[in-house]
Length: 76
Image (cartoon, rainbow, N blue to C red):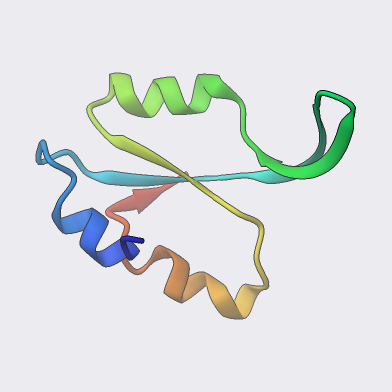
């Protein structure tokens, strides 16, 4: 599995890695209902249209945020 720093250096096209905050929601897979990290697809598409590579960020405790965003070029 690639770390965020590696991903930021090797995005393959020189595009900035942009983190998009996700939220927890109930999601259904067949008969299963599970909590999942989700984000509106319009956010992902907007980052792509602007020339970035979107990455959905999970909700984490505030103490984990600096490590999570260390490999990003920006976030929204």
